[in-house]
Image (cartoon, rainbow, N blue to C red; front, side, top):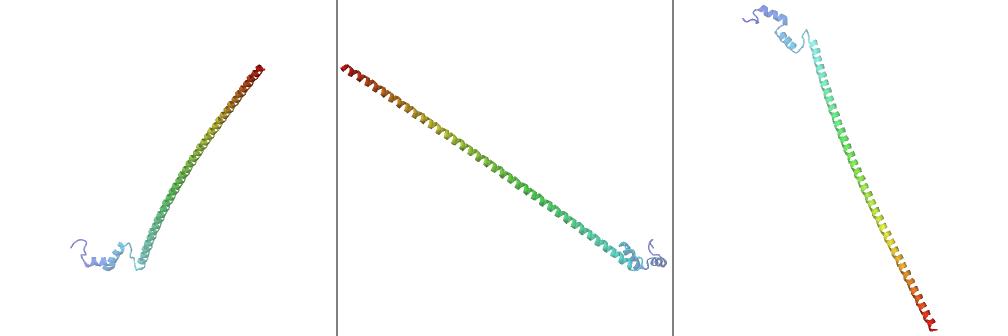
Length: 173
């Protein structure tokens, strides 16, 4: 007979006394494997099962808490992303506003330049008109002087003619 097998009724009996029979021995082994000590009666087993259930519940609660924490973290990340997007949009809007303001300023400057050019042109036209008026006045003055000279010459000629006629009368007498 091989070593480790029951060689006699005494050995079998001692094993049965030790474990309380084959059925109880198997039950004790299975309970040991589960981590439950079978000391006597079913009260301790129930307590241990309750402890296991409590542990399982605690684990489940921990898992739920972890899941909630993960969800909260995800929500926070989403909120941060939304805030970043909003900030980017605000920056873009500000840039657009600045560009619009710059364009408006450029347009105003161009308008001012155009107004200045128009004013300069008007001033030049006024100066040209004044010069033309002065030239006309000078021409009128020259014409008046010429007329006066002609009148003087005519008067001189008349005087000379009168003098000549007076000299002829005197000779005749």
